Length: 104
Image 1: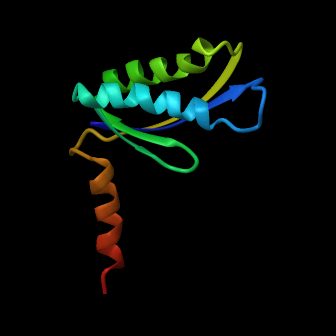
Image 2: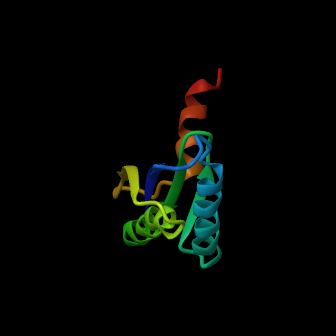
Image 3: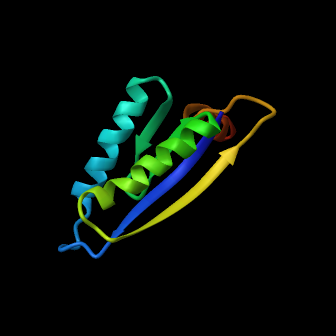
């Protein structure tokens, strides 16, 4: 299982606010999550997505396309992928691992 950190940056919007574009992306992610293909978490600066690598690439392509569907002509997408293959990792397990080191 892999984890992706994804930021979709719509370029050339009419306003500095991009929350409507973020909401469109979240709706797409909800669909993939309902199908059981991914889990995701919205943060103030990005979206974290957990799933099989092939599913992550399909999801990332779908959310990258979302601003184009709204009429934009340019989108920048930043992607970081953590693909650990020696053991299963999840969004929760990565946080739990750090928290263990914080315990007195």
